[in-house]
Length: 101
Image (cartoon, rainbow, N blue to C red):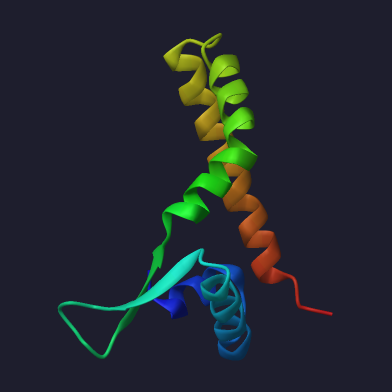
């Protein structure tokens, strides 16, 4: 992922994104790599240590959620997905139309 995309997703400005990436890099959680097709571009690579950390934190929750999902038929999960997608879209529209304080 390019650093700019990470910043967009986190709604950080360029300085904030750079500070975050510097900190993550110092902690050994990400590294900056040159794009092999365009040497001007930098891509962020998640290090195995970060993946392990994520699994140690979120793994138990993921397992519990997957077990709970097993109680639902595929059609029920499809309905739930449609509902959650519609609610996310609606909330995003409201958020986009609401001016920042």
